[in-house]
Image (tube, rainbow, N blue to C red; front, side, top):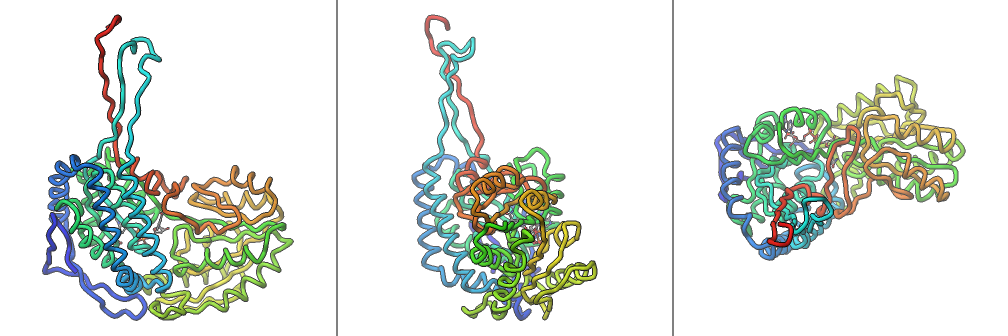
Amino acid sequence: MDMLIDGKLIEKRETIEIKNPANNEIIDTVPQGNREDVKNAINAANKAAKIVKDIPSRVISENLYQIYEELSKNADDFAKLISLDCGKPIKDSMGEVERSKQTILLAAEEAKRIYGETIPMDACSGGENVIGYTTKVPLGVIGAITPFNYPLNLVIHKVAPAIAAKNTVVLKPSIKAPLVALKLAEIMNAYLESGTINVVPGFGSEVGDEIVKSDFVNKVSFTGSIKTGLNISKNAGMKKLTLELGGNDPLIVLDDADIEKAVEAALIGSYLNAGQVCIGVKRIILDKRIADEFTDKFVRATKKLKVGDPLDFKTDIGPLIDENAAIMVEKIVDKTLNEGAELLCGGKRNGSFYTPTVIDNVNSKMEMVQEETFGPIAPLIHVNGFEEAIEVANDTKYGLQASIFTNNINNALKAAKEIDAGGVVINKQSTYRTDNMPFGGCKMSGMGKEGIKYAVEDMTKTKLVVINQPGKNS
Ligand code: NAP
């Protein structure tokens, strides 16, 4: 596939091979973008921004609806490409495409709802006979940098609100799974002013770094690891920043919980996309009184999951993004077992595949639960009652989302108040997101919110207009 700059598809002699994580076969190549390509893309985006800012929002909205139609027509192709590009089981890839369609629709709707407000200037002395109002104006060029794990929907979560707010975009998708973004951009380009969307595949240390440091990019919207996020915040200078970073979400099960439902939720939360989800359940905190019952049911359900070919509809768990990622998971599991935890099932690596794994007797000091483990691992931590559960849930530098299972309304509400996270989910896994809700973590999990309305807000600036009216006191 080619890169897209100024409305044109561009080939390059230097290319990068893109491999299917399931079997390591080369599925395609992409041009290896460099700093010069990024500068060209930013120039094109800046040129287009001067035109796009004056396009009526009705037209922008219609264009986004057309892109939605096109994505819908190509849904099966996109789902297959997601599975080939990042190893996601096909049924989950289809789910990602469905969500992506909704995300575009939300942006098409939001494009027509970008309001300013009137200011009661006369509430302050000196404000008599003065009219004040605000408008929301585009920022200009948005730099979008995305990870591998949701290569369609997370790209749309940046590109669609940017376009809805009349900005232009330079996108760097993850080099581990860039094909989906390139295919999407080709479709979008057909309905947008040339230069509105530009995509430069390549390495983060070069392509991403150039976007972040450019004086001609007005905002960087980044999703990825804490390590890269910190680097970006050091290098971005006076730009607006949204950082959607890693998570270490707890799922608490209290002694009054519906255990069947908690097990179901923990299965989704721990193993969706082979555990490579920012809001994946990464720690299961069990009240001692129900720990045995939960563990027995959860281990039995885990053993039934089918690991295999991502293109097979029966597959529940595909490979990790590459063999290195699986080796990292293997190492952290071995370390945790050496520290005294107990393996209840799984714990086997085969190339880039890792079996779903339950580990008991984990404590919150262990690296496995202090750092984010991006794999199909469910560590169980035992606690004595509500207060200790909340203490353990908060004992981390992360604060993306959290979940609690309880039938006691007081405990549910107290948990919602006490857990320090961007979102607290009651009686459902933390791995829950609708694409319109405000989404984004606190602590080291990031800053800023996505969710179309919130992203649009963050991709505009507020401009104040003051009119001095001729009158008695003017
Ligand atoms: P990553 O390694 O941080 O990479 C993310 C993106 O940043 C990639 O496109 C990468 O380029 C680029 N990058 C790397 N170094 C850079 C630099 N110096 N300057 C600018 N860009 C640079 O993350 P990942 O492994 O792809 O994704 C997994 C992480 O993302 C996990 O921590 C997960 O929790 C987090 N995540 C968070 C959310 C959320 O919404 N909070 C959602 C999904 C994932 P390359 O192509 O070279 O890798």
